[in-house]
Image (cartoon, rainbow, N blue to C red; front, side, top):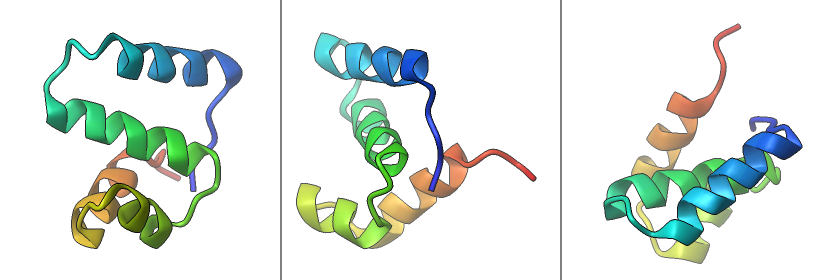
Length: 66
């Protein structure tokens, strides 16, 4: 899970709403947003009908390094 500040959340939501990016980046933005809402990876993948491995890889990339 990752944590988003209110400002980061607004930026991600605006990015998704604009819809000017390619589908891959919008998908990643959705994963980032739902991870920030503490959704489990399996739930995100099932809800949006994405592969678990794709969802897991994107969420893993978004996590900050320790």
